[in-house]
Length: 463
Length: 175
Image 1: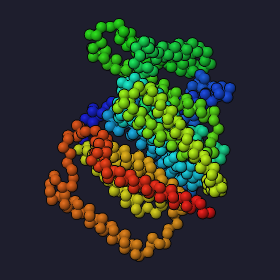
Image 2: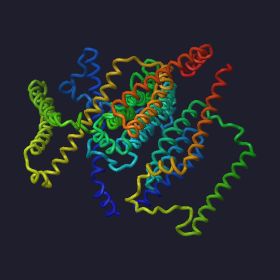
Image 3: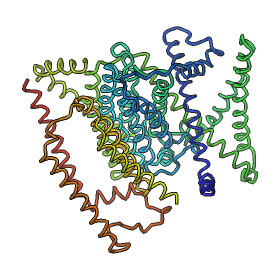
Image 4: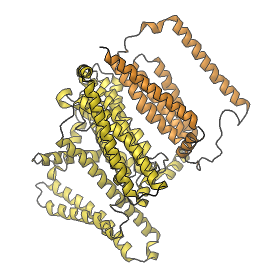
């Protein structure tokens, strides 16, 4: 038995290490995304944001986490205890498990050889809503259950759109395997966002709706529903929901970045004269380190000074690894490069370098989420449904057909890729607009009965 | 060894939660146990290296159909027991159907034991680390050899969908 376990660990230690790292690091990253969000919000509203804990509020997430952990854990008397306990765990488990299929760079991936690749990520992360629905139901509270019902309706509507958008990407890549999708974008010399822009933007909108972010955050609309499905939750359970939401943001960002933004490839990976971009991560890290050292002297408390030095040290260390490997690669002979420890260092560099670009893309994706959140007001529920069913789903469907036509034009008629992409994108947009106009006319023609229907629908959701 | 541990774990969870699903009074609890049953069935698919079936089970049944189930359960009050379920005719029908299904299961197991290795179980000719990619193979057989049944099934689904839309519209037009 023990030998079996040992053999298991020996075969799978890389994957196990990656999995443990994901479970340990993702909550921390989620905390810092919250900090960045508050900082971005403060910036857009001409404030400073959190400044007290740590230099520029850098330790705020840790303070928040400690506060949440030592808070009293309340379970309402009339709640369904088992499901109330179980629901947040379900949300968090789904979010973390789905990360197993994502490739953060060429080496860091738990499920390296899954044949279904991205489908695994999408399918497992689709289990997260159960946590929301069951949690809302188990709280035995009207606000909670309305939030839960809203979230189910929203998810059913927008998952379809996201699925069709992903299909257009899969068609272009010709595979479901994560590493092969990225390789396909390398050999095709293009990110798929340029070939299927409609697919990318429908996926962007659908993914915002799926993660319940503003302007689609009706399940937790504060002005109407207190806090929606998590009204009754507090302390640790509440923080699980919160973590799951942010982990889901990372997941949808990673799926979008892998399929449409070239995964861990740098921008323009095939253009030789842009090779200097390879040095950018090293430079960025070194500059961050120098900045931290410069600011360290101005911190008021001793702990904060130490913290700045620690951050600077980490930056310098990683920059040193990067720089040494790049320097060796440029100057040394092939015989030196083929030695085993050098190769090991090289592959480590490849992993970190890929992870840098991948995380940069995911961060940009998440930044768009924040930007939209602080720019747009919240949708009304019927507007949300209209956008989903009348606009996005027809558009995504037409786009799948258009991508199919584009592939046929390229492969059997030998058309230029850019011409085909331009024509099919324009065609998608025109057909989509015609569908929407036809829909509007149809709605206007039957406005008499629909007006009464609308009031009925709103009533049923209001109470 | 590991394979059989994984199999018995998932099979045990599936059977246990199926039993719990039938015996719970609360409809939401039943739904939760149905989800566990479906998930552990998906786990067995994965253990058999049928990755595509695994994810299809999760996306369609768990992620799609069960979300709808729970949605409906939350909208309809199911905690009030319905009297017509208790009628003796229905009970006898249910018992009869259960026995027929049980008999079928026994027959299949008995039949497949008669011919060792050539029963209803299809043995895989490939070693487990050199399996062909089953997503591609499934697509190939679905769109070449089984094209007609596939199209018939999709037409059937389309008809069902249109029917549902028509029925929904009819109710909306008559206030």
